[in-house]
Length: 377
Ligand SMILES: *Cc1c(COP(=O)(O)O)cnc(C)c1O
Image (tube, rainbow, N blue to C red; front, side, top):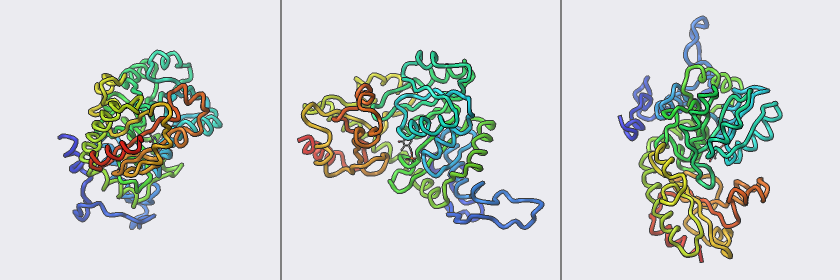
């Protein structure tokens, strides 16, 4: 069965007890037990809730994993997944990881004596060199934010398997439609479902999918005890959003490809970062592990034309943090996602005052281009 069909027919598309085509929102905290000696499947919604279960089952099927888990945000999913490690463990995390993941590991997990090395994961050699006797895991993101750098997922898996390490990937930018890391050997896939999976800028949520039963037990223990679970209403919104994931992404990706090409030819644009462009350094690796370039790109405006001016002039796009919605969303990494990063460090990575990130939406591309043209001034 192909992916588009699996989005609609995956074994979780219907309420088993009533046949309802939309999984009901089981807005309940607890479940009556007729026989206390034989507890039912559902007892208390922190442990399990039927709406959340349908979502967790769906994402597991879509990613090709053993089990899925839904959390109250992408960060709750990431922090919960990282909570399977212990004091004294060493983790290797890619240096251009999502800002929230960077901060959580830096300021939070380090306080619990988890040792962390941030590394440029696009260089497999540096990853392998940073493996220590207590290393337990490698955490990557590909493509990364905001410069769309590509990490060779198979290469990371190879290093991890050689050293007996668990691999985690934040798959938010790609979704299981475009990239299924478990099929490439990754152990744990994480999503900010706030983005393309929800797809409508109306819910904050996170998902985790694991490859094995053993990992499922460890994540489930964190989900139940730490308790950052997703509510029934928000679970329902994700189930609803998922049904149109393929059509949304197909269209958004097509728009992104046209916009990226147009920007690359524009005299006021210095550089465009998008794996769909021929001159993107990681293009070959990306298309060896993913089915498309996605709908997020970044571009740098030429000197004297600051990103801030562009942001103020643009009309048909929201200026906001976040991405993956039906509307085009532009963000300004220097003042938004990477404001907390020291300037020197930021510029070393290529995140300048003139860099703008675009999450391309479902607008007609002619209108977007016309708007970007006037905003470039
Ligand atoms: C937004 C985002 C997160 C965090 O998710 P929240 O739902 O905002 O908590 C993590 N990783 C990536 C790549 C993101 O874009």
